[in-house]
Amino acid sequence: TGIGGRQGSRNAPSVINAAFLSRLFWDGRAASLEAQAQGPLTHPAEMGMADMAAVAARVRSLPAYDAGFRDAFGGPATATRIVRALAAFERTLVAADTPYDRFVRGDDGALTAQQVRGMALFDSVGCRSCHADPTFSAAGLVRPNGTYRVFPVFANDRARRHGLLVDGKAARWRVPSLRNVARTAPYFHTGSVADLEEAVRVMAVSQLRKVLSDDPAAAIAPARLETADGMETRLTLLPGRALSARDVKDIAAFLRALSGDPAGE
Image 1 (cartoon, one colour):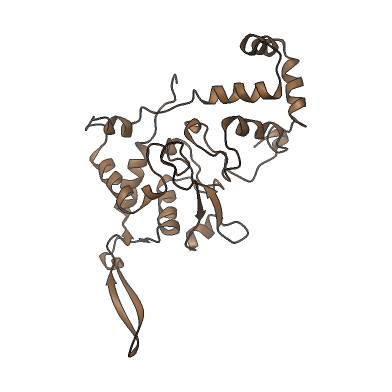
Image 2 (cartoon, one colour):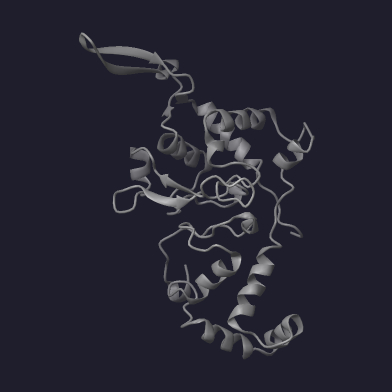
């Protein structure tokens, strides 16, 4: 919710650890924190300023800010200096000392047994192909992997129920970071999913084409194949095709281990 009670159409991403991402905003239109910082200032549904010249004039009119800018930059507030100051502050918002970070540094007790199992599942079912460490995003400055993904890849009732399609279709989004994901609900570009476990289910069926079931038989998939004698149906055992309720809880438990306090909090 922004100026005058107006609402935007997208869920606001966290700025924690944003300094480590190569693209900002859900559609990735900003290539730097400076470019990102400018957007909300002049957006009609956020801060509603007419333009950056109006922003600079407003800041210069406040004695404390005017003095602060002259002290920091050696001159008055300008549009360029304002976004540089905002971006400099955002670069201090780092949460790196998470249970996961302590675990990979050698503290075997930093994660619970459930979180360790969840970490193994996170890797084995394919989550890490888009959410690679250390940023847990394909848009990270370190180990980038394509930046964008189509979502949802596979049409499903869950995605439709949560309103995750754009005009009834999948769309191309910057892969968000999962750092601090336990503290940044609600989820997805719509903010329509409040529960972390449900977010895991949505991703499982939408991106990985998993079946949510505790029934071992869910791993057996019928396939109709064309042979020399016509069509025949074969049953194929697909290991990892199904995610159980326990699997979902364990992956969510691991994701909670990716949360930490920003420096100085």
